[in-house]
Figure 1 (cartoon, helix red, strand yellow):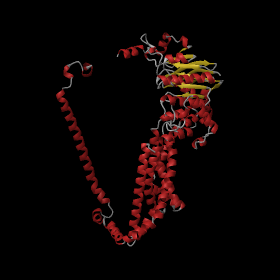
Figure 2: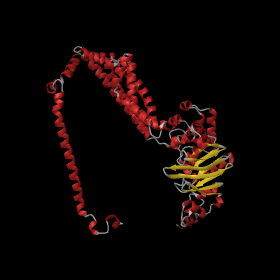
Figure 3: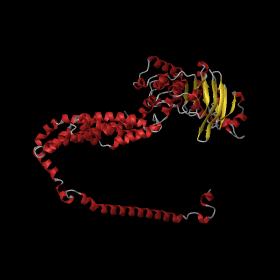
Figure 4: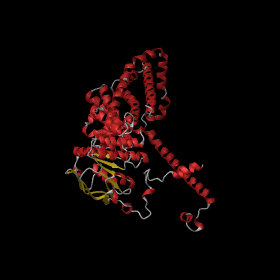
Amino acid sequence: MVDIAFGPEPGKRPDPASASEVYLDMVRRKRMYGGILLVLFLALLASGWMLADQRNAGGFWNGLPQTPDFPAEVLSEAWANRANLPGLLWSYIPSLIETLNIAAVATLIGALMAAGLSLLATRGLARWPRLIPVFRRTMDALRAVPEIVIALVLIFVIGGGPVPAVIAIALHTGGALGKLFSEVAENADLKPVEGLSSVGATWGQKMWLGVIPQVAPNWVSYALLRLEINVRASAILGFVGEGGIGHDLKLAMQWGQGRYDEVVAIFLLLFLAIVAIDRVSDSYRHRLVKGTL
Amino acid sequence: MLLQADSVTRLFGAKAAVDRVTFTLDRPAFLGIIGRSGAGKSTLLRVMNRMTDATSGRILFDGTDVLALTGPARRAWQSQCALIFQQFNLVPRLDVASNVLHGILNRRSTLATMFNIWPEGDILRALSILDRLGIAEQAPKRAEALSGGQQQRVAIARALMQDPKVILADEPIASLDPMNAQIVMDTLRRIHDEDGRTVIANLHTLDTARRYCDRVIGMRDGRVVFDGTPDQLTTGAARDIYGADASFSESATSTSINALPPDTAYAEAMVRA
C-alpha cells in the first residue's frame, strides 16, 4: 500500500520535516495574493474619487457639514411641541392602518401568484418543462421593475389610491417571492409526488397534496418576511400619491416649518409598526421553521 | 384478464435498461421478478405503470396498448394498475386515511381535492381497507409517525383503494425487517388469493420469490433470462440470473427467519453460563 501511494523509491517519500515548510510556503503565497487584491482595490477607489466628486451637483464638501441641520431643526421643533405628540400619533392611526392593509393585501395576492409561478418554473415539478424558462423570465421581469415605477404608471392610467398601490406591490412581490418559493420547492422530496403520480393524479392534485404540505412552512416564512418589506414599500408609495401614511408624511414635510412635530409623529408610528411586525413575524417564523406549530 | 408484454424496450442513452422483454399472463397470477441491481426490474414496472415511457414495444391489457395512452387515458390506466414503492412514497405530513384516499384521486376533481372533500362512502371504504390490513387504529396518525412496515401497509391500502386489476410492487420489502417483510408479503399474497388481482413484484431475495410466487421471471442486463415456476428455479438457474460463480449461496443474504440456524447453540451457551 505504501509503495502504491508514494512510489517504490525511498527518495520520493515526503520528508516529514519539510511538511511544515510546505505549509508555511502556502500561507505566504495566500497572504501575498490577499495583499495584491487590497492594493488593487485601494487603487481603484482612489482613481474613482475625483470623478465622483466632480459629478456632484452642489458640491459634496460644502454640503457635508449642513447634513445634520435638517434633522436637528425637525427634532428641536418637535421637542418644543412635544405635548402634541400623543394626540398626533392617535390621529395618524387610520392612515397607518391603510398602509398596513395595502401591504397585507398585496403580500397575499403576490404570494398566491408566486406559488403558481414558482411551481411552473421548478425543474422536476413543472407542468410544462419546456416552458420553465418562460416562467423564470416572467418572474425576473416582475422582480426587475421597482414598485414605484409600476405605481407611477398605474397612477397615470387609473389614478391614485390604494388599488394601484396594491397592484404595484403585488406584482413585484410575485416576482421576488416566486424566486424564493421555487428554490424551496426545488428541495422538496419527490417521493410523495411519485406516489401520487402512480395512482393517476392530475398535476394540480400532485402539487396540492405532494408538494404544498412540504413547502408550506418555508413559504409562509418567506411571505412574512416579504410583508415587512411591503409595509415599507407601501409607505414609500404614499409619496407618489397612493394614500396611507406616506402621503401624510409627504404633506407634512413639504409644509416645512410648523408641522415638523407631525413628521416626527409619523416616523415614530411607522417605526413602531415595523418593530411590532418584525417581532410578531419573527417569533411566528421561528415556530414555523422549527415545526412546533 | 390478459396481460401481454411484447418486446418492451427502454433505452437510457445507448444502454438498454429494459431490452425486448416479452411475456404473457393469461389469468390473474402472483408473478415475481428477480435479478440483481440494475437488471431493469424497476424500470420495467415503471414502464408498465407509465411513470417512465418505453422506447419501443407494446403492453396489451385486455386488447388495449397501454403504452400508447396519453393524458386522461394514461392516468385512468395508472389508476387501474397500482404501484407500490420500496420507499412507500406516502405524503408524510398527511394522515394515514388521507393517504389511502389518494388512491381514488383519478376519479376526483382537482377542486374537490383542494378543499379536501371526500364522499363518506369512500372514507368508510378506506377505513375498512385499513382494518383488513390490521392498521385501522393508525388512521388519524400522520404517515411519517408510522414504522416502515406500517407505512408499507398504508401504501398497499392506497393501492387497494384504487381497486386495481394489477398491483405492481417495486421491491416492497427491501427496506423492511424480516418480520414486517413477512407481513407485507403475506398481505400481497392474500390480496391475490382473495380478490383475484394480479400481483407483479420485484424481489431481491430468492427464498421470497420461491415461497410466494406462482411464476418467476429472471432478468439480467434488461433481458428476460428465466421464465418458469418456482420449482424450476434451481441454484444453477439462479447463478445464471445473477451472473454469479460457484461461490454464490442464496442463504448468505437470505432475510427469511426460517433460514436461520436453529437456536439450540444459543440455548446451550445460556445454560452453561
